[in-house]
Length: 221
Ligand SMILES: [Zn+2]
Image (cartoon, rainbow, N blue to C red; front, side):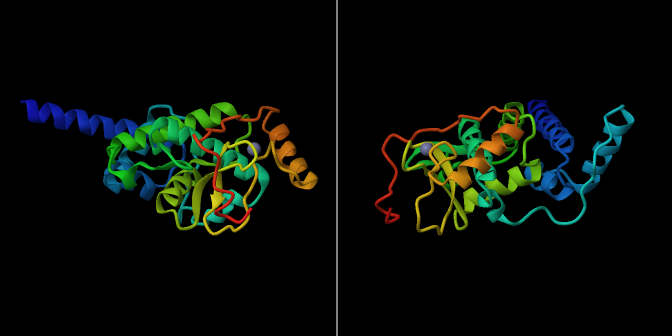
């Protein structure tokens, strides 16, 4: 009895999280990887959602986004990716408390990997959307961000050399990058400000500050 109760609870949690992924317009493959549900069950869940009066959703086909460089393409995207990464640290998708900011929970084997992590990702992403009126990062890109930070070969978490705010940075970048607030370049500053204006004039202001100043020395300034 106990075993079947546990199994029922786990199954129920998986379905709840899959529903959240569906509402965020995640692809079937993403839902399968994060919840462990079969494609068939996901399709049935999607149909029951629509039959239950759920709003029409765009069902995205094809591959999930793969270009991690997307997050450092503009000052606005870097700013939003950094805010989302900070929320992922707070939610537990990425583990905080390690220099220079957060590291993937998976790498340390501390946080459970699986349905709990999927639920935390939803929490972090919903927090990010609540902060911005016109968020530039879709859910599939949020998944890509978390995965890219977990791999660490293209993106990593760093800190603004001027104020210490947590930043998503190119893992191979030689030059230290400043946050949107500390950007010295007027053009980049304008881009960041425009992004903030488009986002409703509210900067996320989610710079998680590491305990020590970041390693500008290691990057050669
Ligand atoms: Zn800064």
